[in-house]
Length: 243
Image 1 (cartoon, rainbow, N blue to C red):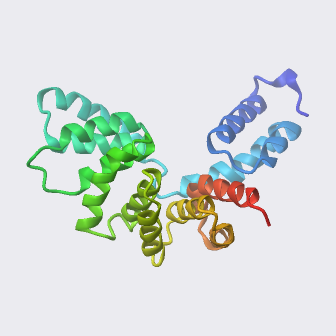
Image 2 (image 1 turned 90 degrees about the vertical axis):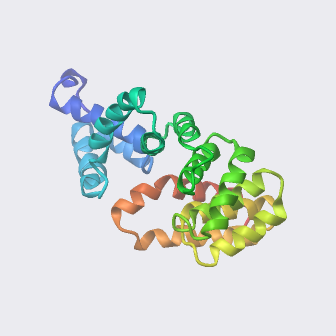
């Protein structure tokens, strides 16, 4: 255990930074013990292994530009509440996981003259995160009807999930099966495994969950970090199923 007498020195700052990062990113739990028992040395090892590689992530510093642009748009829409400004602001809120604000922005962006499917799809993403499955359904159906492969087939995966959550298991199963023939999105595969388990098809669910966990080996580091929440959910669901 590190020396608490020097807690507010450089070593203490390293420990605090490491713990804050751990809470935000939730990597493997053993890292917390390394930080606590090795103190500044453990924190330094943790930051070098888990935090430093994040700087190579292609989107590592986009939040700086995004914050500046958000402030500009929030000021601009007071005088110019155009659909384009609301759409751009909605995307920023999605990136920040501010789902209610994103939905409100897309509600304001969409009008009877809107001919692009994108704002309908983005609004549906926010609605799905808010648990508003009935509201998301028509937006997703519209998106998939226009382009079944929209957003790397994520739209189709979300539509299947929405069917399931609105008590339409037959349509959900058909859509999940169609999308997962070609889609490798972890989110879609996980939701399909959830659906299979809920339908009593536990052997199929286990097989799909195992395939999700196995593909982690060949992923680049930044993608593993992005997909970590899905892998964590996958492992928890896999462990909950009987052998």
